[in-house]
Image (cartoon, rainbow, N blue to C red; front, side, top):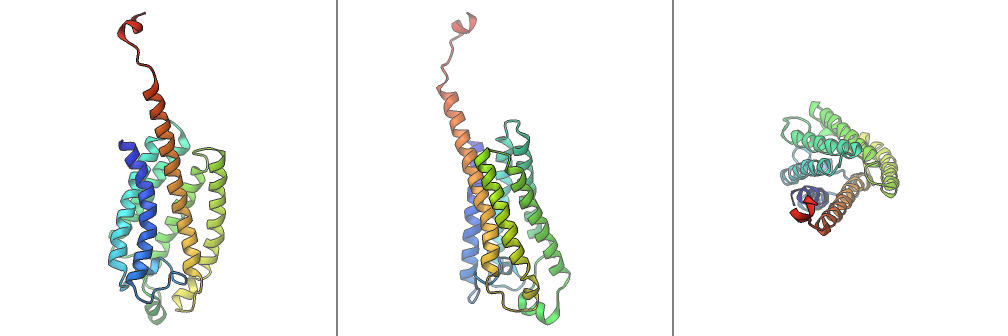
Length: 229
């Protein structure tokens, strides 16, 4: 049961992340999910910041639990252990970032008026580390299950590289408070694509755990007399 709960936290984290971005956009009147990044929901002074930060903190805790579940489901398979460790590190790093006094970006208007500050620069650094975690998780995760999941993982990596490049081109426009018509869409395809992958990994491991548990339960129990023979 404990392992099922831990693996299930991977699905919960993915769903909560998506729901949080939707709720955050609803809280901030005038925010555009199509043209504004998810990070802007957590920008200093943004009306959605307190709620989004609180819910994303829960997401980070769930990610740590998911990582422990993947580790416990490794069955001595090195790639799964690496993925589990990376998931724990990813969740812990994001959780730590929520409590750092710096690392949040300013809103576009403030960036255009005063320029980037140390906290804006650190935000980019933290985002870069998050991206590295995600690609490492996907890379090792590609070898954690089977051939079909490997192909799916590689396809996810290609999607993230493509839309990550498109989103990165708009970074300068955000700082200059210029229009970014599809930045929000590009970034959401990236991040939601990763969380969909994580949820599917959790489902596959949960299914494998249930099959193993069923087989063990169906094994005939030997009596002491039979063992003695």
